[in-house]
Length: 124
Image (cartoon, rainbow, N blue to C red):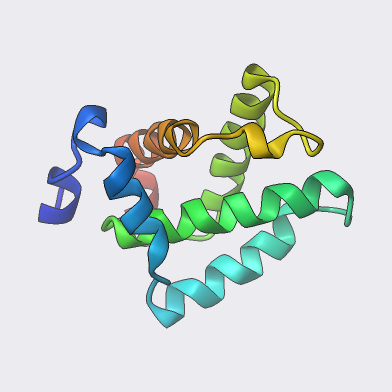
């Protein structure tokens, strides 16, 4: 595990403020190109749900890349399923997506990040 990963090893250490900072920057160009390709592949149609989920998916994949996890094809599907499950659990859909708070986003991001770290031998 590299130094960047160790700095956010526990959920409590990855505060909402740190999560917001991770979302601010675009990842390396190579990773950004792959993320953008995979986001398009993540959705089979241009449904309303796809339009409101794609920006959240992009934001969290960028944050993941900026937190020291190199993006690998397929991570988008893992994160997308976590997002869908979490939003359903919170009662959030395309009509009330504004009800998603940054703290909720951070929690979704931390769950995703923990899964990826634990699957390091697959994605690493």
